[in-house]
Length: 195
Image (tube, rainbow, N blue to C red):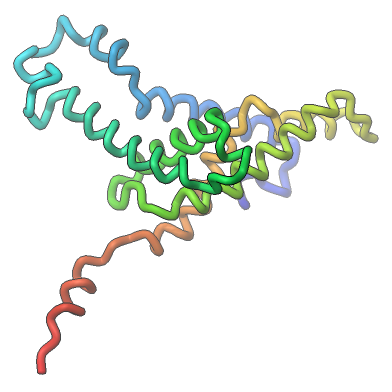
């Protein structure tokens, strides 16, 4: 899917480390622990603006509450995603999906999150999780090349399922984003027919 250049296999390890590091930074940027975030800034902020009851548009709390609303919308859809499947009922799987969709929505505020995006993410996370877990079971893979074995273990690493799924989802949404865009002009034109 062009995330890793097939012509330059030797760089895959570095590329994977780069995209995983970037995801960690995105997660730190967008998924905020309100208690830690506001404690650090409390002495530097105007408490009239930055308090939980403030309706000021620049209030950190307003952003926090807006983020929680988005997170709850995503959570509701995730809880209904293949709800009869044990894998998708797992809280760790659900949290990974919520994080991925939330971060993507924050990065793409022109459309944010739309129902159905969870259905695109589901097969990605299922496949990547399956591959990583299966490889993890066989810690002592014997291949003809130690270099290939190390590369395979790095690419399908169980600790980076969320990171890898985010970038696969981001790449997929590059092509699918158009199907989630809302065209208000089309809606208005359909309602305004003249005889």
